[in-house]
Length: 193
Image (cartoon, rainbow, N blue to C red; front, side, top):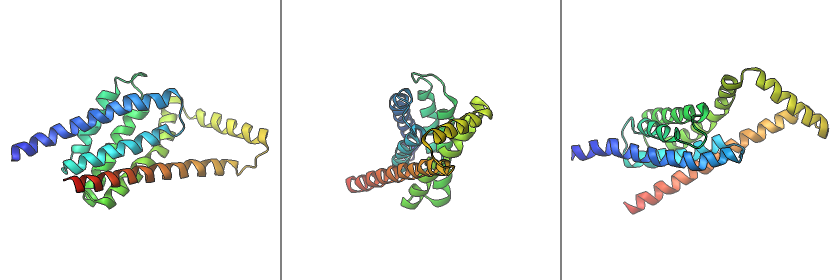
């Protein structure tokens, strides 16, 4: 019996990681090609579902990190090739889930916390990776572009706060949607087992 558990410990995270990586490679690349807004947060939210279902099958420390590494390996073969942002995001997501499930144990509350932390991690992640890739001056370009849009349409300076608030609220909706998917899948799996 212990041998089967050890096989599950390696096989399940690799299988889920590869499936997650294929999802990232196909759907994530498509979202990137069409320049879909909030694609990083959306992919993290949907990736969270893979992490939760995996942990339901194999509730042992390390499985989410193994799945993250398997996902990254598959993601490296994406249409656009290697992209630093998504690869780092996948790794951070694995760490967030590992830490959350270690501290809070695997339950519906830890699923909620881990999903929200992972999705909201994309907010600082965006700023940090943008700064690393394009340099600090890119934010001046963003602010100038927003200023020009605000001037053109006659918006007040609170325009920035509204845009940022909408952006944060969209992250909240993505996290909530992802959590509800995970919760319903866990409920379905519990009834099936």
